[in-house]
Image (tube, rainbow, N blue to C red; front, side, top):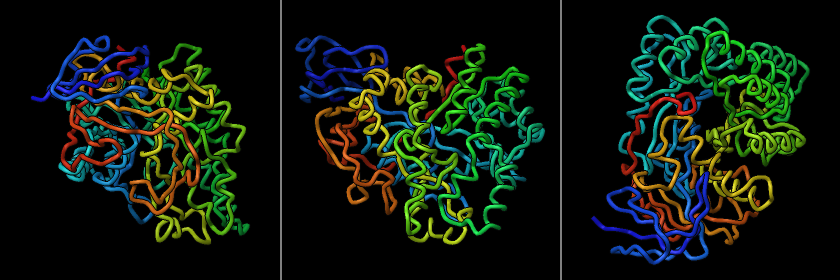
Length: 461
């Protein structure tokens, strides 16, 4: 087996920054050593570059059915784009449909992904129909390495679970070691506000953000926290967008509760200004939870610095503007909810380092190490250490680029960050020791990525 040495770079993990050479052998990190000590069959010069762990994006939706259409990225196109962006592991969401079992949904997602992925993948399970059979299946899935379950307080009639169903699933996860992930918005109240807005003729995309009020995100976040407390279960709140929701998480963590929060680049870099763009352009930015007014961004960055928010994932769920987002012309409630972003996360967060929002190590912590720990992948994923999978990115911190749909690799006809200039760019990416991007050229292939069974949340051991 070929031994590859990455020489002369600054190795950055969540805990350390050190000038070291990294030896890759048999798909794993074999050693780290002072520059010049190790030898190999092939040496890659990383002088002046960062050597970082491959990103772990713990929240993606490839091929998700939503609103009468499907997310435009397949597992093949989406994981290829992930690789281009320095992400070497995704965790996607298998869907249980109402009236069907978890197993049926999981098998369907295995069929979509197997043999098609350019990088490694795992699954969370969306639980849409809580009953005795579902609860028993949760135990079996945990044993198989699907150790997290998502529930929705939003989307009545589709994914919605009421408080009783949520409590029962939480009680089960408290027993089997699983982690409940919560979409925390009061969907019942939001549906009333949607109906009222449309009746007033308020149909433009910006009203999507106005009806999905920050207080209804905060209320649902509070309710989810208290239900988890009653159940004696941990809780992970996905795509936190509102400062009021961050405050609920901070309060719960100050009480010592095992409560965790995730935010996404769109909430850190975009705002309701984008939703208000004219000529229906705002539809490009419709996602749930929605974009918030710009003043919320400072509180999200603060939450990331204080560890009241632990993870930045993308909630990558792309729909083309032409033919998909346009389904909602004249009725914002029919715009498919979701943004593309799996390719942009690592670069945007490096820009946050450049801008002084977070440190370099915190960048790696929130994008690589913590999601790996949160979802039972560490230290196989999320770090550079002997024995870890050789998921390694050589990153040029000085290169400048302009984000654009013209140059991105996601299967979607627009970029949410069109024209944004960022400093830093992925140069070379290894997935389990195999170069999938080599000096800005794609060298991977569908089928390289494999399903990774996960252990339970490593913050609860």
